[in-house]
Structure formats: structure tokens, C-alpha cells
Length: 282
Image (cartoon, rainbow, N blue to C red; front, side, top):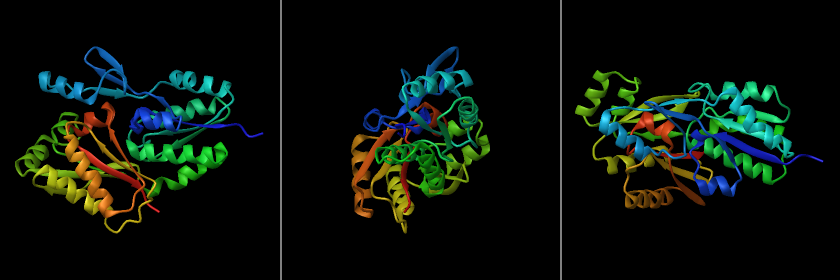
């Protein structure tokens, strides 16, 4: 008899607590280090806490992947409960998390690691897909193969309100950040070939930019209607999110729109008022 399959992921998948419970997805957190303090991503330290600390003293956190032992301690009890595991991580181009998970999986039997080639709810979309496959009775090996074949169809992008956090984190030069801020440019970032890069620069009022960005990202796409994410990094007014959800529904047929707040790992790089619309193409 085939063993039941669990989907697991690292905390950069940015799924809400409701979705984690609904699909029984188990999460291993990255570690957030700020000054002499350490926190687990998603537990006890939020992006809003991080922004408050940044505005107070200019400090930004560093993130670290789970250790090999942490992965072994995470996987082993689940295997002992009789499960097989399909595990998803943030793109291997962005973090050592997948490499460490793969080393742990090689020491165990029944763990199938998948490099999502994505970040944030781009990973989350694959988690949900995997969980729905498990509910239909697919084997762990087949689910892992299916998810690997699907990574190129996941559309992961964001538009940023500020380059201050990327500059502070060493991801763009001060001159570039100054120039963009003086011109009120809002960079659009997308995942491509496992890497995050700028694909366009928007200009103008941020609420208008959100609508332009969403319209352009959805234009000409055949979007899977099951699950679409609007993921933000905090400090966007709830009424703005409601308007954008309605706007998405005007543009495409969609069954469920999930609004999520990115964790500290993603938010520390993008800064407040970053927003993305994420989906899977047919």
C-alpha cells in the first residue's frame, strides 16, 4: 500500500496560516538575525517589527538557511509517522536552503526535494499544487516530478515602492537607488531562470502603479483559475488590497484569490508596500 504524502516547505513560501492548515503543509523556518537577536521567520517577528527597527536605527536583518541537523530533525519524525515527503524550497539560485535539504534527503528514505526556482508565494503555489496532487492519491515521486515540470509555468513578480532596502542590503548601488528615487521609479522584479531581476521600471503614484503592473502581468496570459495570490510586504491599506482583488477578477476568471503578507526573508529585501500578483500559467 502506498504511503500518504506530506508537502513540506521552507518559510519563504509565505503561505498564510489558513492555507497551511487547509492543505496540511509543514513548514521549516529560516532564521532571522538582527543585532544579537535571532528569530524564526514567521514566528514572533513580523515585517512591521522589522520596518520599525529599520526606521529606528537603520539595521536590517540577515537570514540564514536551516542547518543540516535542523532538516534531519524536521524530516525524521514525519517519516516515522509513515509519510513520504515532497519538500519545496526557495530557488537554489537565491539561497543554500535547497542544497542543505537535498543533503538531508540523501541521508533518509522517502524525502523528495524540489527546487521551486521561485520565491515567496511562487513556492506557495507549488505547495498547493503538490497538496492537491497528494489528495488525489499521487505518489511522492510522481508529485515531485510533476512539480519540477511545472516550475517554468509559475509567474512570480513584484513591484517595489522603494529601493532603499535593496540598497541597504547591498543589492543595488547607492547611485542607482538615488537616481530611481529622484525619478520616482518603481522597479518591477520577476523570477526568471531561478533568479530575481528587474524587468521594467514604473513611474507615478503607487496605487496607479499597482493597477498598471497587474494589468500588464495578466495581459495575454492563460492563467490557471484555481489559485491566484496577491502578496504584499506590509503597509498597504486594506481598502487598496480589496480594490486590487476586484481588479484582478475584472481581468481574468479566478476561483480563489489569496491575500498574503510576505515574511521577513522577502520583505527585508523589498521593503514596505511591495506587491506581487502570482499565478500559474496553463
